Image (cartoon, rainbow, N blue to C red):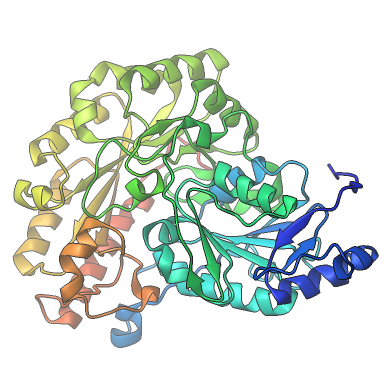
Length: 490
């Protein structure tokens, strides 16, 4: 919906290059911009009508030490999902033209013939291994359009100062559905943003920052994600071997725990926030032509009462699609009846972070769990007919015996899809602070969880050969049978 041009003059704080772009777009407003109503402060405030907002998901990126140094090409990405974080932001941007460019699905999406408009504001998201690419895209679009550039996402929430560059204007830290809208409203009104959770950057220098106290208000439950903005790519969003064509839904943000390696707590300042169950069911029902619904929360079952009610609502709504969700093993062991109910609601796959196979190593990761609990949870879920995706961590200090123990554990377990990743200290996490003096690779392109960024205990070439062999064996589970009794058709 377009907003009619108001009689009152609106101003926006932007740099000079952004102003030139806006003058070209809004030639009819030039007398106002260049006339007596122009505000001559240090931020350059100029009149601006409703804004074209372009949200960008970066392309597949990241570099591989095994491939570059040792010719090992067997370590590949498995899943590609829709950019739910951008769809969520777009859902709260009513009144402005909004488009999403998903460069993972459409690498040429920023070419002139593909763009639906010339953007006034560009928002980019990215995880750590995408951070350098996000900077490159930001610099290119600032030079190309003179647009206002806003960066958010996981790495921005863990290390916002990384994006203090002359071509980035604002960094949205943490959950941004509400704060990004507040930023847009402030720019539209002509004020200098002073928004908790938003870092202002002026000519590459950080200004003062006020942390945000996140609450359920930040979820903006009444504004659903704009799934329609990526509908043209829907067939490419798949989880091969898990559920085929997959739609993403969020039921919670943050987590009930603070594992040393995890960046999730940074998104909500260590708070666990739940969407209303009514909004979760609404979003599940909105995803029509998909095989599977992936609940993308770090912990869908952090509040057992809410989780039980959500299962009942999904059953009542007649949801007939398989569900995939993350759960802690100790939650399964303490509440087996809850998962019997969720099996009836459609839970087909549970994703569990087993992480390590020794209690000592689990303790070092602040996992607050035990190996025996992991084993018991797997038994309960398999008895209920729920398949298991198990995440494991391979530490760079692994020796041959450690690889052998992990391989034996996986072979003896009943985990349908084990996924081993290399322990990686992500900036902003407790693990990073603990390991930073040992880090030998600072280039974030390598922070893909398939590279060792600290020295390996084994000879590096042998470490990667063993890891590649382990991963190849684990992923062979993808071809060992159907995913959901023949329901997968990817």
